[in-house]
Image 1 (cartoon, one colour):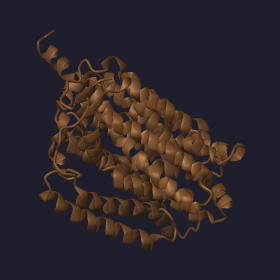
Image 2 (spheres, one colour; image 1 turned 135 degrees about the horizontal axis):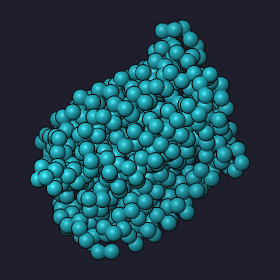
Image 3 (cartoon, helix red, strand yellow; image 1 turned 120 degrees about the vertical axis):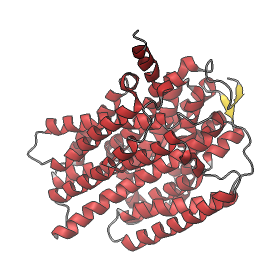
Image 4 (cartoon, one colour; image 1 turned 90 degrees about the vertical axis):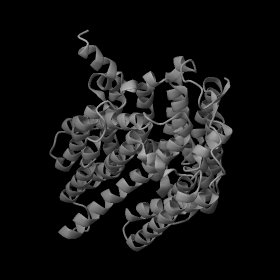
Amino acid sequence: MSDQTCDTPLAGRAVANFRVIALIVASAMLMENIDATVLATALPTMARDFGVDAPAMSIALTSYLLSLAIFIPASGKMADRFGSRTVFRAAILVFVVGSILCAIAPTLTLLVLARLVQGIGGAMMMPVGRLVLMRSVARKDMVSAMSWLLIPALIGPIVGPPLGGFIVTYLDWRWIFYINVPIGIIGMIFVSIYIDEVKGKPSGPFDTVGFILSGVSLGSLLFGFELSSHEGQGAAAIFLIAVGLLFGIAYLKHARSHPSPIMDFLLMKIPSFGTSVIAGSLTRITQGAQPFLLPLLFQVGFGLSAAAAGQIVISTALGAMAMKPLARAVFRRIGFRTSLVANGIIGTVGYGLCAAFRPDWPIWVIFVVLVLSAFFMSFQFTAYNTIAYDEISQDKMSAATSFYTTFQQLMLSLGICIGALALHTSMAASGNSEPALGDFSSAFIVVAVISLTATIWNLRFASNAGEEISGYRGKVRRAAAGE
């Protein structure tokens, strides 16, 4: 494939292969998402092998989050300088190398170091993978292509736990990391064959100070949100969140004077992008909380086994996949704004219905509710992930993807935090030492109400937003002309 600059027209560049490109990017991101959730299931077994207490293994998760927080903001600059294909391929390679190091780690300390390496690859895969798609797919195919990217985010947290249970039960926990090797090698081969090399225009010196400030801020916030979901860690969580906010304020002051800040908040002034970031962030509170609350509800509240709970939760993956072929037709018929407003309410209320789940409900009814809820929520994120880039120029695309991915990761972690906080607050109010069904109901309602406020921002999208992407404008004009 040829080397091109970011202002090269998209038409005529790998357009015929947009489904292949979308699948390559989605597969890499699915590998990363499943890896994180599978690992959580295996932590008790790994703790026994390393001779440590199970709670001590949480550092294996948080060390990965630290790498994400530090390197995601830098991903756009890296892609501009070295080319999106080169950086994406290198990210997969680093992730695979990190996986091998994790698999052979003889101690917890070396595992943590290996997870830091793996996290560097993961931090580059998420935003640069999206950037690869943006630079390789024609605008008319953007909705279809972005539908594929949503699947890893929704399927990973659902498929991970039962897969982890299978690996730990029948194989060895080290296979959690070994399975990434063949997937990553195949991915790098396909990246080399099907994806063009596209570099961005030089945008000034690298923002080293901003890199440090944003890394400390995001790392502290992510760690703080993570700790807030663990009992007895409230003081540490509050301290880290406070540190994150202080460094975040320092970064904002720094960014105003830097010619090329590592995270460009001026992007928020672009209507479709800024509105999508805010509305999508509010909606992701629910997406982050559901994979945390649902398995707990079914295992603790209903008394089901982990395997049985996993089988029910797989319904959300089925709903997400069922949406994929329909999104483009809906956007073409009614446009992005109407779709986001109506579907956002339906999807959020659907997940809010989880508050009414009780053990005497027929399993098939719960399954259907979750399938439909995931269907509408998957549609919603396809819309957000597409409309966000409607007004982004090619020279700003790399900065926009790293910015968007940073907030996406932050809000997913915040969703877990809010879900856990709501659950623990309800338990404290009712005097329960273990979460009861009513406590789960309160948590589901809290996250659903927060996500419903995204409707206010969805209404701020222009009525013709994304018309070139969806084809909605052509439909309106034909109708006005009486054709």
